[in-house]
Image (cartoon, rainbow, N blue to C red):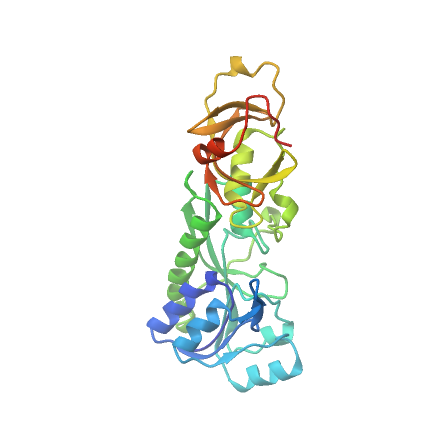
Length: 313
């Protein structure tokens, strides 16, 4: 089958790598334009463009993929299938109607749960015990197309957004390579999504990382796991921003909680800083104060004066 691949972020890399290694016919790779990055604003390319160039594939980088000029090019290629993975632009109905078969998408959730831009993050923030990947036929309504294939995996207590994304992007590539032969032989069924079970995973905002210490420790821990690397879970200490990267729910004896408010430090030790919450105790193990590098709790307490009774706000 003749394929046009749409993708930009590193989540799309295993899928493109799989297509290349399995010698699928890739007519073009469509990715976001080069952007200025970093302190010195050097022009940077997407991860997908770098891989496509290394594989000597043709690359197309429109500012807007839905313009008449873009549509003219895409139509001229006579593709059978569009494969869309973390591309970064919404395709118009006219673009979606171009491939002979249909456009398909790899989505990092068990649709219809967590439609939207940040399914991995919100699955963790909400405390889900499983996630997965869904291959869908793309329709005009975002992430609402019928399901071609779907596979579930467990979310481990040790997982955060970085580790879970790594698992799901590899799973997505494997599922894509299973789907294409089925589509080619027409040996597949399209299963409509149950609209009654739909939930959404909107793009993260910086404010989504703010810790509410009145919430239970487990919910705060879920937030910490779900917002790495950006925006990061954060609070304030001595009028400075304090990011928390690693923590666990502690078995601190409940009898010691009398008189302490949510967000107040209960104990300072090398293995972690115990902080009171709305329910149970959060043991902070890795953190970063504004203007400094990330540190373990042991490093932090050796360099900063922090005492029982201090308040995180």
